[in-house]
Image 1 (tube, one colour):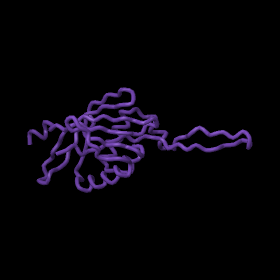
Image 2: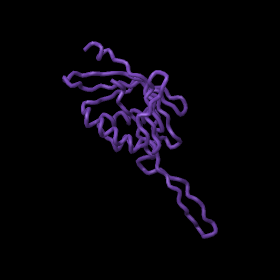
Image 3: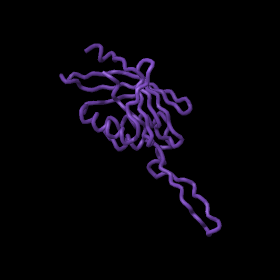
Image 4: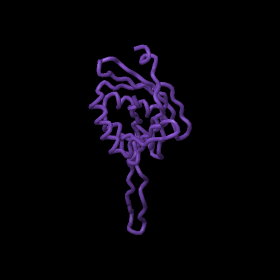
Length: 170
C-alpha cells in the first residue's frame, strides 16, 4: 500500500499590503500583519507545526490542514529514482483529504523523530488504519517538509513506506 497520509503544520500568515496615507503626498505601504490566529502559529517551531498538522489529520480537520499549506503546495511521492506529484495546490489537497478521510475513517498518524535543517524538516511518520477485515495495519515512512517564507508548508516529499513491527507481526 502506498504511503497515503498527509500532514502539514498549522501555520502561515495571510498578509495584506494596504496604503495608509497620513497625507496624500506621504502615502506609504503598511507593514503586512498576520491574522491573529496565524500569528500564533508563526511563533511555533517547525516541529510543533508538524505535530499540530498531524493532530489535525487525526481529527480529520481538512480546513486546518489546508490552512497550513500555501496556494502552490506540492505533495510528492518518492518512488525509487522518480518523484511522482500526488497533489498540486491547496484546493486539490482539500479534495484528496476529503476523499481519503471518507474512505479511511480509521486513519491515524504519529510523528516520531524530527530534524530541522534551515527551511527543511525531516520526520519519521507512522500511519495506521483498519483493513477490510478490521485488523489494524501500520507503516512507517520518512517525510521531508519544506516551508515558505511565511511558515506555510510549500512541499512535502514522502519516501517509500516500510512495514512497522506491528504490521509485520499481524
